[in-house]
Length: 419
Ligand SMILES: Cc1ncc(COP(=O)(O)O)c(C=O)c1O
Image (cartoon, rainbow, N blue to C red; front, side):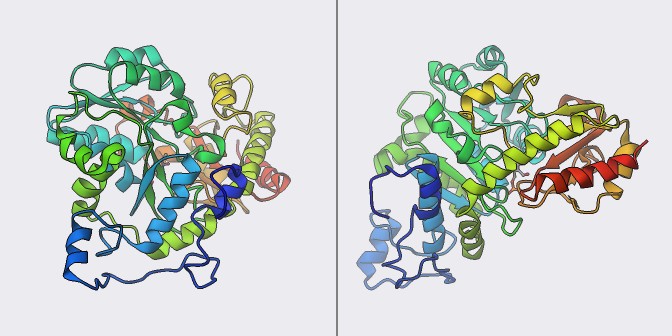
C-alpha cells in the first residue's frame, strides 16, 4: 500500500498489509500451507532462530499468511506488532500468562466473557494467580484493587452480556499511575468503533472469530502490542532478556517466544485467509450492525412481552455517555440484551424464530440469538450467574446486517407467541 498511514480506517481495512507485487499480482493474500520453510544456508537458519531475520522456520512459530493478517490487524488498531493465534481464548490466555507468575495478581472488570471468567477464576487460581474482580465501570474500584502484586488491569470494551462500557481512558491513567499496563479485549467494539491504544491501553486482544472475520467462517485470536509500555520498571524483572532482544516490542516477544510457540496456539493459515476475506468489509458491516442494533432495541422496547432492554445506544443506558465519548458517535455495537417474563417465555420465543439463527456465536453478519442461562452458563452456580447478570429471563441478540425491518418482523412474530 502506498502512503504513510494517512488513509482513513475504511480504506486501511481493505488495503493495509496488501502486497500484490509479492503475490505475483494476486490481490488476495496467498495461503502458505507449508509446515516448514527452506533455508539456503545453515547461517541463515541459525540467525532466524536467534531472531535476527524475519524469515519463517516452522508453522507453529510463524507463517507468511498469518503475518499478513498480523500486519493488517496491527494497522487497524494502530499498534506496533501482533501475533495471531488459534482462537480468542488462546490470545487472552497468552496475553495474560506472559505477565503472570505464581503469587501475582491482576485486576479485572467483572463483566467478562464466559470462558475468560472461567480462565481467570477457575484455571489461573490453580497456579497461585489471583484475579481481583471489580465493577468494570468503577475506576475507583479498579484503583483500589491494585497493590504491589498487581501485574496488569484487564477490561472488555463492551461487557458481554452486561453491555457496560468502562472508561478506558481513566482506567489507563489509573493503571499507569501504579506502573501497570492495561489490556483490553476489543472484540465487541472492533477498531471500527474504538481504538483502545488511542485511549491509553497497552495491549489489545481480540477474538477474530466474531466481527473481524464476520461470517462465522473462521476461528482465531490476536494479541496486539502498542509498543510503548516501559517494561524496565522493577515490577517486571523477568522482562530483561526480551527488552534486550526486542526493545519496545519486548512484551510481544515474550507472548510469542515464551507462550505462543510453546503452547502451540497456532492459527491455521486457512483461517487467517478467511479472516482477511471477511475483514475487507468490516467498516460497512459495522455501520449496518450498529444501526440495526439500535433499530431492534427501539422496536423491542415498545413490545409488551419485553420486560427490559439493555443496549448502550439507548439514551437511558448508564454507559451511553461513555460509549458516545469512546466510540466517537459511530454507534454502540451490535449486541442487544433483553428480558422476557421467564425461561419458558425465552424458550417459546427462540423456538418460534424463523429468520434469526439460534446458536452460540456473535458478530456474524446473520442475526443470532441465545438464552445464555440455559446454554453457555448452564453449569455455573446461581450466585456466579447472578454476578455476571445471567438471569433466566435474558435473551442475547447479536444483530446481523440483514434488513432491519425483516429482523424486527421475525422478532415480532416470535414475541407474539410468548405469553
Ligand atoms: C468478548 C469475547 N472475548 C473472547 C472470546 C473468545 O473467543 P474465541 O471463541 O475465538 O476463543 C469471545 C467469544 O465469544 C468473546 O465474546
